[in-house]
Length: 365
Image (cartoon, rainbow, N blue to C red; front, side, top):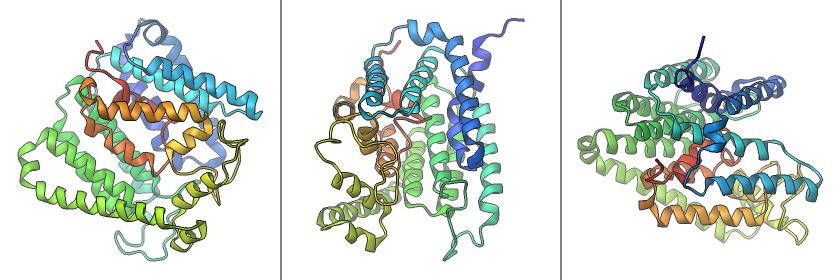
C-alpha cells in the first residue's frame, strides 16, 4: 500500500506544526517532556519522509542562510556558555522544514482546519471558559489556572492558528473566506471574555484583515469603527512607550505591576561586557522571570548580538521592500505586535509561520 504524501500533509501540518503549541498549556507539566519528545520524534520522521523537498529543492530567499546561522550560533553558544538548549537548534530546523513543505506541496484542507478550530473551542471551553465565575466581571479571579501558564495562552493559540489559516488560504487560494470570517468573530469574542489586552488587539487586527480581504464592502462600511479601535491601540502603545522612557528605575514599574517591562529592564540593566555578545547563562532571572517577554531580546539572549542585528535587518528589509514579498505587509503586523508581548516565536513551534510571512518572495515558484 502506497501512501501519497499529499494525503498526509494536511494532518502533518495540523497535528505536528499548528496544534502542539496551541494545547501546550493544557498538558500537565509532568507530562510535557514526554509530549515534546513524542512530537519531535514524529517531526524528525516527517523530515526524513520529505528529505528531498526540504533539503535538496532550492528556494530563493534568505531563509536557508538564516537557518544555518541559527544552527551555528546555537552550537557556538554551547561552547561559550557551556550549556545548550536543544530547542534553539531544533526549532529553526523544524520551522525550515514546515516552510519548505508548505511552499512545495499544494494542498486543500480548509475543512480539516475548521474541525481543528472546533476541537480548540471544546478544549478551551472545558479547561477555562466553563469554570469562569462570570464572562466579563470577575475581580480577584486567578487567571493563572492553566498548567504553568496564564490564560493568555488561549488568545495566543487562537490568534496564531487563525493567522496560519489565513496565510494558507492566501497562499493556496482556498475559498474559505466565510469560515475564516466566522472564526475571526468567534475568536475575538473569546479573547474579549478572556480580557487580555494583547489578545484583543491582535484579534481586532485579524478580524479587520479578514473583512478587508473577504468582505471589503463591510470593511469600508465599518471602517470608522476599526479606525477608532486602532487609534485607541496606538494611544495605549504610546502611553506605554512614554512611561517606559520616563521611568527612572525598575521600582517605577513595580508600582505599576508591569511585569513585561520589568523583565526587559532587568535584562538591559544586567548587561555587561561579559554577556553583551553571547547573552546570559541559562536560568538567569530577569526580576521574577526567566525570559523577557520580548522576542527580540530573548532572541539576542539565546543566540548572540550579531544574530539579533541580522534579525532586525530582516524585519526592516521586509518593511521597506514589502512589494518583493508574496504576503501583504499587514500579515506581518500580528507577529510584530506579539513580538513585544511574548516570546512565542524564534525559536518556537510557530516559526514556520514567521518564515512564510517574513521570507517568502513573490517569485517563489
